[in-house]
Image (cartoon, rainbow, N blue to C red; front, side, top):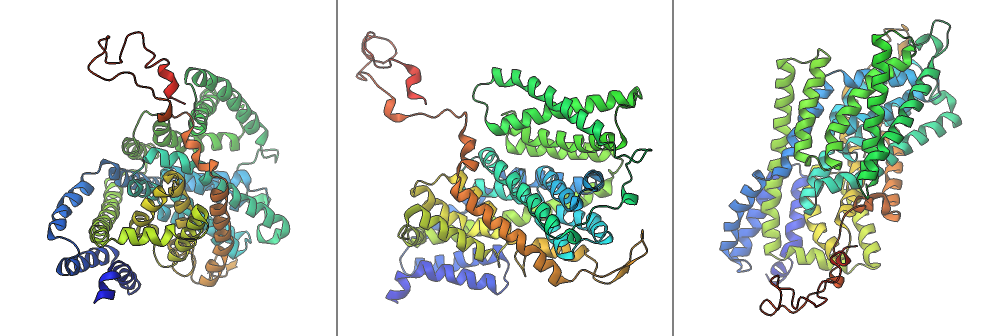
Amino acid sequence: MEFFVDNLAPIMFINLIVFLLLGFPVAFSLAANGILYGLVAVDLGMIQPALFQALPQRVFGIVSNDTLLAVPFFTLMGLVLERSGMAEDLLETIGQLFGPVRGGLAIAVVLVGAMLAATTGVVSASVISMGLISLPIMLRYGYDRRLASGVIAASGTLSQIIPPSLVLIVLADQLGRSVGDMYRGALIPGFVLAGAYILYVVVLSFINPAAAPALPEEARIYGQANGRRGLRSLAVLTLIACTVSYFGSEHYFHTHANVPIDERVVVMLMVWGLTALAIALVNKVFRLGLLSKIAERVTFVMIPPLFLIFLVLGTIFIGMATPTEGGAMGAVGAILMAVSRGRFSLSLLKQAMDTTTKLTCFVVFILVGSTVFSLSFRGVNGDLWVEHLLIGLPGGQWGFLIVVSVLTFFLAFFLDFFELAFIIVPLLGPVAEKMGIDLIWFGVLLAVNMQTSFMHPPFGFALFYLRSVAPKEDYHDRVTGKLIPRVTTGQIYWGSIPFICIQIAMVAAVLVFPRMVTHYKDGAVTVDASKVQFGNTSAYGSDSYGYGDAGSSAVTDPGAAFK
């Protein structure tokens, strides 16, 4: 009994893991363990029964948390966009743009995955959309099945690290930090990861050209009458838009001191999009013939989602809206985009709202269960057990970060990102803060690591999503009439391995180069407490403001306290 009392916290945690491995629902496993061991601890006299009186207030705090409202807003936005035809248009257009290049279709999938991630934030929507649209085209033109399936699954998981990601909202809430700061911190690692995917595709296409061939001439539908691609006008349009964007943004940067890099990118992107769209509209209305088919198509297809990105992320980064308000505007923008494309209907809205409600309830139920578990776990000093276990690791901060990264990676084989965020983050966050680790950087590090949970064979959800839409039997292609062999589960699993390695390398990069994340502090005003000076605080002194004598140097330079 003495051993049981001394080790109740680790026994409680191990019992939770056993329940999860047996397949019990996560929310109920968390809540049941919390209540069971809480009652055991009350019986043993380790905690007072009054502790459970705090439980209703904690649950009410969850359902009244404004930050979590962003979850249904961004989910609804992603589901409406999935059905609005935006993904199809983007994949077709960017596929045609990069089609003449070896590996061009795979590059297009990564770029579209990044754009969908910045507008939807939902992995299932991205993977299923790209699997239905791009996988048959890649198989039609001879892409290696492992490369095709791997690049689709990996590009879909970008929705977990590129804002407005749902996992970043949950991590910010669990770590007690700003969602906006979490978005700022994750922006560069997300786009660097997308760039690493493209680099892998380019290198592989040069090493093994047969694995990623270019589109044949007859498949390039946006060519000019004389057989040229018409990319020159697109290059000129891009150059003009970039020039106007650079000089047009300078006024904003001059009038706003210490503009951080993410805000600069958003403002320049907005000005670039406005310029390109204005030129394309003038060309189309007045029939000037300045733009080729491909240039006009790229402009009209890419600008609307870019504006939606600004509507969501831009308003958050420049301080016009909170993440919850940005999510609400994004949901409205997605509905308006679906209406403009003629894809909106009441049945679409009903389906999207039904799925949104289910996912939101799923998140809230897990959060309530984790609250019950953490209340009892802390009551039996489980937080101190975790703290002593991790702070005592050799290597200090580095030892802690490496062990946490390895632990998260292996737990991701069995748990998805919501379960990881609600189970291990509340235990690790206080320890990281006590060790002096920046919690935004720590959260982004965990987010990049948790992203692998979607790619791990055999339980990766992105692999399941792709398996559900990939051809399970041999079929005749409707365009070429050729017999296309099926995509096997083994090919999907093997295709994910190189991209998991890239994600692990990204975890190492975030560890070694924390500036990729901590740039979110740029432009922030911080107070150096060591430079704050106070005068005589007795009574009111000689002046009416309580700074001591009017002639004293109590506050010689009000700005000296800020760095």
